[in-house]
Amino acid sequence: MSGDNDFDLVLTDAIIIDGSGRPAYKADLAVADGTTIATGNFERSTADEMIDCNGLSVMPGIVDCHAHSDLTLLADPRGQSKIQMGVTTELNGQCGLGVFPVRPEDREELKSAVSFITAGVEWTWESAYDYLTALDRVRPAYSAGVMVGHGSLRSYVMGFEGRAASDDELARMQDALRASLDAGCFGLSFGFEYAPGFFADDREVLALLEVVAQRGKLVSVHTRSQREEFTDAIREMAALCVHAQDNSGGTLRLQIDHLKRSGQRSWGTMAELLGLIEDLREGGLDIAYDIYPYTAGSKHLAGSLPRWVHDGGSAAMLERIAQPDTRERLRKELAEYQAGERDSNPFELDFDRILITDVGSEANASAVGRRLDEVAAERGEEPADAYLNLLIEEDARVNAVFFSMSEEDMREGLVHPLGAIATDGLAYAPSGPAHIGNPHPRSYGTYPRLLGHYVRDEGLMPIEEAVRKCTAWPAERMGLTDRGRIAREMRADLVIFDQRRITDHATWDQPHQFPRGIEFVIVGGKIAVEQGRQNSERYGAALRV
Image (tube, rainbow, N blue to C red; front, side, top):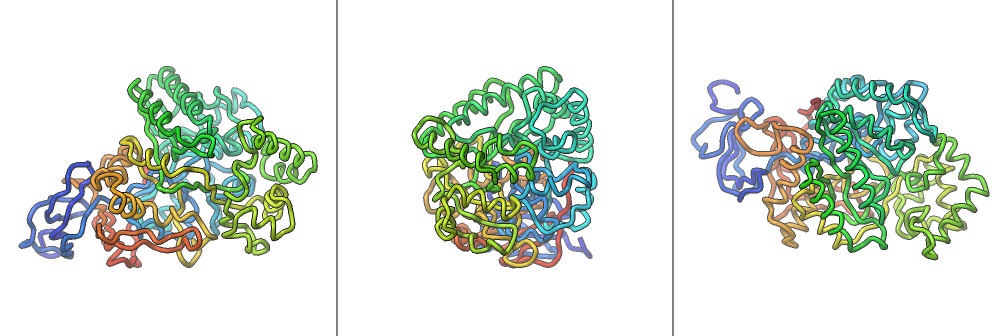
């Protein structure tokens, strides 16, 4: 505070939605030294800054507990698409797609493996400590924590070979994990649908889970399947977590990534997943999930190809898919899937359900924003060949959106109390180094879409419950006790918004568009977004636990 003022910041005439799920109430709110001091009546108080909310709503800063801004936030620390929709804390390094630890000679291979999160930034780090130091150096607009990605952990020790780890390699992975947790990482993320994560056997997973349990940290998992086999995949991961807790004498929190029923053959069965999670939680496992309000997901295109294609890393994969026998095998598997003789599509979805969002070069820029079947027709190729040739031509740097879910399943997952709302997206920008491709609109619109379309317009749930699922609940899952609620001595991360106007504007065709109706975003008691415009000062940092 400056001079003789009572507070740093006072918000008057606000509708306070405090994140707890309790009914909203009208009050003023006072902030000093970066924390909330009290709510009440402060009209007669003095402050360095006063905001007359005039009946606008105030909620805690949004906690995005599943994000992929590891690199885009370094390239453009403004974090525009996230902070403009009220995100003040995010957790990156998810789905096993980590960017550390990494040896200098392996950086290019790891870059290819995590091409979904790529950005134009020089990789100067090796360890988690180095990465977090680099993030602090650029001073991001909001608080950003990070998970240890199992994919980078595994490749750091044993490369991209599709085999089981030796005892010595397991011990080295455990040591690297401990060092990363010591540096301040929140926990360990797995991506069992992606290389090299899907090469891990139960012995490897259990050894790493025991380290996490010993530290009482978070485990997040993109399971080996999000289609018909999703229920079994969750059950298997839960059993390993229970085993790890028993072996170590510790505890962990298990977060299921972006819960969904992907693929039409599994639609209408969300209740089965939710029932399983409830049963596991009642049985003593601290398990929950995150979800976003869209019926399409997004990832790197190569991530949909079967496990056998990826053995040896990206270079080996690209060489393999150029071979006629590989293509014949993939076509055979596709035909068997279409005939109902196998459970999984080797390309994941029908080609008209795959939208190209980004490519690595200008040579195929015309493919961005188009469905795979359209791209194939323009190239005069069969869709399977266009899919594989595009990967080869772009050195595997192709991202896509997959329209795989039903609205009914998604709504059922949104309303369940164990679901945290997360973007699964990156911090982008309408211009500058984070203006990349034609991304999934969730990176700009997740929270306004929830609060506007689903809460205000559709009445899917009370706004107090929706806010809890965006703030207090994800903060609790991350193990954070200083944010996520509006209460005395809590960090003053706040969002001032108009319930009547809040709307997402990002679309599949034009995703780089900010939402409407978010008037102010406050980070640590400082105004970061004012009347919808982001200030030049940035008030965030690398978040360590």
